[in-house]
Image (cartoon, rainbow, N blue to C red; front, side, top):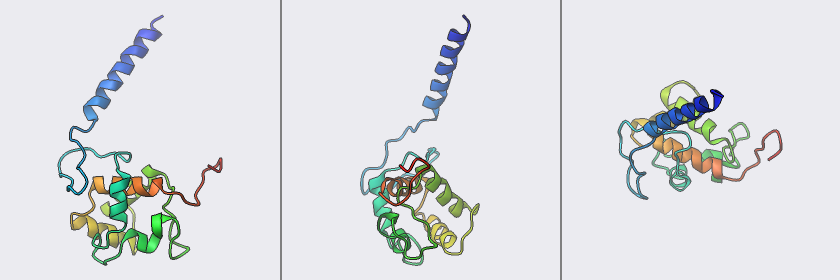
Length: 149
């Protein structure tokens, strides 16, 4: 009979930890820059509408290219078959992959330059990456899972 009180206590403890880790600031309104701070941004904290603006922003990188210039509109049809389809990709995968390009954990001759340049210019912080991931994940594309969904 001790299992039920233990389960309740664990549920309460986990809830308290999650509440303590949740964001304390409201997201920036449309057109407002994100405030830098010690706020933890999760892969699922993105706003697809803001991500759509980032995806087409030619001023994002030092090369003057937007994400969609290479990955296609909505990330569904890249200009080169060796470039990845981003539309419909898992949001957390996109978030962590872009972070890795930015932070040097993943290297690619084109992407590392694009992402690092945008980050150094202050245009692609964790919130911007989460927004971009939310946008591409929300787009319809040819990707499917093992159940063909």
